[in-house]
Image 1 (cartoon, one colour):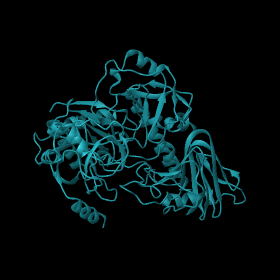
Image 2: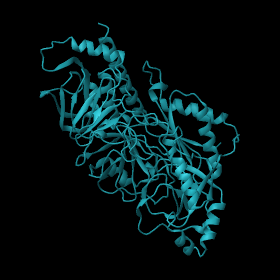
Image 3: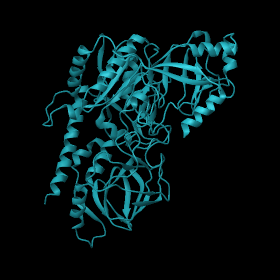
Image 4: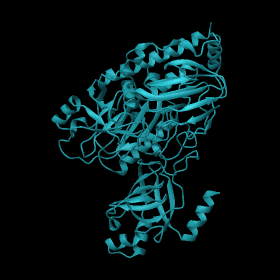
Length: 334
Length: 238
């Protein structure tokens, strides 16, 4: 169990999302940066879908009343345990009475705090994710507040073994971290200098040639009207060859739709299930983390890749995650 | 069956069955939905039916051998879907479910009923009769949890949206916007003309089927008194 001393800007319980109910209009939710969420879980021996805390821009402080493992992955946040700095993308031992303080983000926007056993809240419609607008799921359907006490679940066998392994380290050290960390090539998808990779959207061909060129050439601003539901962009307006009335159809994480004002919207975790605006592009899944780590005021550019390339990138990343998982299993054998 | 298959990002496939709102297309979509429900496909995450499309989300990694072969997961799903569609029965073997929705028309429950009547040169009773005598079809659910896109309203009671949207529309409100009618499952802002309200909950996250309605349902609105409204509301809260 741990107690929230300060909640941070927006700290919510998230897992990989609420699936199976989008057909009746129920928003999927889930971690914005699913890659970081999954790695954070793996590093403490959890299942990838276990609930973590999604931290936004300014992190929480919390006090633990158990010895356990934690991991913080995603954007780069200043984080300390009892005043000693801890590194992201690591397995860290935390002891009873320790205070974890997650400060402000130095780069990126969101980080995921995984705790061995996962965050223990009731599942609603099969998911522990918080849907803020409807007040469903997570911790009483809302963001965490000071004074909340949050439980972590039962440790998996793997978590227990990892905990034993890390506890064997020199107890005199102020901070005990596992010596392993994740391969640096897994983090290249966070490179902000590179444009975000997209495949053509379903209504791509309805846009004017000039708009399509603009879409790939220009930078777009992330406006303050951006949240877990979607990112509203601002740039030179994009226009359609002829005005069309579209019937609503499914949208997805990473769909870039363009309403009649010509300013694109990137749909993210708390998106509606369907939409009726033309879709100019769909972001490749491997670049969802890049989007999740953008904040209002940042700029974004897009580049097109073939659908087959997006698929290959997807599979490559899944293989890397599988290797990470197997690597951690190996640690516990010795 | 006429259809086109499109990729939708790197983890979804969209089947397009037409380009207009049409009960025949809805039948095909319902048929495919039912078929998917009856299959055990470990790569199937979920599907979203809409007016003319059904979008299937899949797990690409589950589709390819874990040894890193380079087969396209989309192509694998497209092949499976093409086979499935070839084997689909020509006709649905079940009738669409009919859901009766009790509605208390007018008064505080439907503050715009008089306006809808006035706009169309009808009496209040006629508006209620027209609205409650038709059989409607749920074409899709979207916009909000459990929110049905309903077809089948008589144009005799079509009414433009309100010039200024209300900031709060109570859950269960039944409204008219242009040629459409709908029911709000949750309290939301909105510009629909409100003609009544149902005490029945369209969305309940604690139920195993959280949405009262699903794509393909038939709907009939049944006029009820304020007393009946109260009784049903009390009953559903126990």
